[in-house]
Length: 215
Length: 104
Length: 131
Image (cartoon, rainbow over all chains, first blue to last red):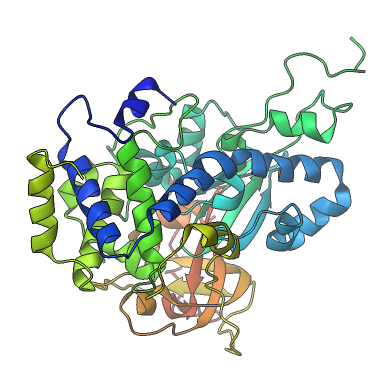
């Protein structure tokens, strides 16, 4: 969190409030006075998505699928239930579907109409995912978009773009990178990035050989 | 509706701008806008489809010129007024008070 | 009206708000069925994007019965119906410049879809380049 954000907390800000800040404060103060929102509930909501829910959850799901074939089979068959086994359920993840990337099929996820995203496993979406450039071009030119993210796919690979038009939420199961054979589930989870679970990145092999891997 | 939110297939909207180590929220007002929208949603006066539609009603030029949580804020204000939980007048009056420095 | 209290935040977020409806509604399509999306321009909310209206695709999976957003957003009730994952070949949406291998999947409800009749007139004209 940047220094600037701290300044804005509570007390008198160092600069005049922007129009947007004024409107947020106006709504929050009116809703609170009328008893329609509980200020402590607001803090709990913010804390949940700022500190408790995020892509580390999804990374645990991916790592488990990489090391446990039975779990992977359950995940691909009924993702909502398999993800719930790890404790991740609820809002914006009520209907989960996992898409497996393979050497011949590459899946990537977008929401062209708004910003649908699997909150329980990835947290709140990054700005680029919600932005017009990504939403407009992911469906029209997925290979171009992947190129912007540094992913070059051979022509022989089929790209599947999933436009999240319903309450079904998609999580990409990226390919396990080479050179990770000796790694533990926890070490594997640390390799898995948010972008690889949206399908706009591959999981990079570990920088150094894992413990136990012959040099 | 054939709104500007329906972005699939459009050209000319620029490069995809990514941010390394992006924070969940970029400013305190984003935290508050997120939380009051979520909390107000739990009142049960509208559903998620109405909530999405409210953001689509933002004028197109404004939609493209503003950030994500500004869309949320616009939609929330629209719903609160539409459902009679707040009036346009009391919102504007409060904004004016706050602008004058009457900090709450 | 119920006001969300701090102590309930964790519980309600973990519970979520399911859009799946447990009602015995029959599906109009099965996986493998060829479908044609309707050409609609409603002034209200819809989850059928413009780029996928009036296009041909194939039902890939049936997700079950869900609330229909077009109805729900207008306050006209859930109008529960089957929701499908429909596969569109990239070239059927974007023309010959798109990759012949790539595909776009959208989640679409029964009310957005019509069948493509077998050997039928609803299909694109025979001279349409198609894979």
